[in-house]
Image (cartoon, rainbow, N blue to C red):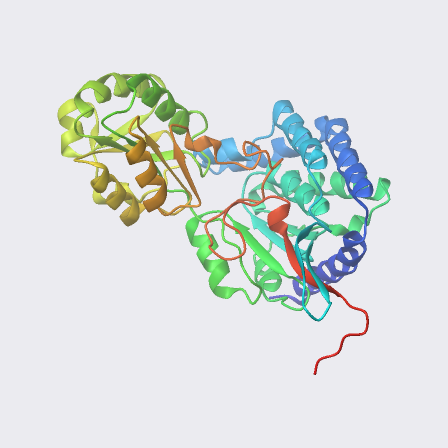
Length: 420
């Protein structure tokens, strides 16, 4: 590791630490003004952002990367406008900082309040999706946190320009520009340095492939909030409405297959499988989805490839779907417990008792009844955007928005009380 990389990352972390103290004291209006300027800046610089992104996309295409990877990497005018709209929606959210979570009075007369405060400095390490840069920066500004952004090398041109536009906009609004730091080197040692800065960084959020997230968690000296893989299931129960089930499965799998909340394994109750699977398989095929099925599935859908054992544990992030016919709800839940990653799971059913059992017994950050797993998203949940979908259990679980980027402190008010 060169001293230049270490010095670069440490300098950015120190600047972020100073900015975090100032940003934590900014009133809501100042933060909202900064977010509005950030949104305006992205739209104003659309052509320059697209030009930078084209360089990243062409470099990735020349390396022969997968279709899903290119989709995550590519910016369009529509996606830039969506980034800007996400920032406007974050600005419209209630400010969690300073919120009194609870308060009480003790017999001694002291009054105790638990108050929301920013976490401080957040290190955000992510791959390939440049729109995430704007989401992360916006959420951190709103929650009063400084952020150190370290995007993947494949999007270095896009992310460098996005971060520069956002920081300039924050400065224009009168807030500390150093609250948005971008590690503009592709040297992988930069990540290792960031993971070791426990005196300057308060939380690390790694967002990417399973191996990368595990690697970051194992090496970090800073607390880690994991955005792990999304091995997502939909279970179609015997009582499900076939039309509803078809709509949900198609949306969950094909609407945008390259993201973590997309469907990877479909479980179908044996009683409904003969009527549901053949027409559903035809619709999936029309959408370009490759099917891999268990033996019972292939009896009903001969065109499906035979599923291997590894298919039940694979996050495809592509137009590939594993299908298993199961005997009952118990078998579906058992399969999810054995193979699920804990991000999102769904049931399609008209049986209220089964719906309640599924939501009670399935262990995931989000459990859905009669709805697509693609809805498990900060924007869809009314949170404006998200830093990721946490599969951790401590501090935050599920979509991580502005409130999840705060902690609490106790404020105690007395009039001279001392301890006996």
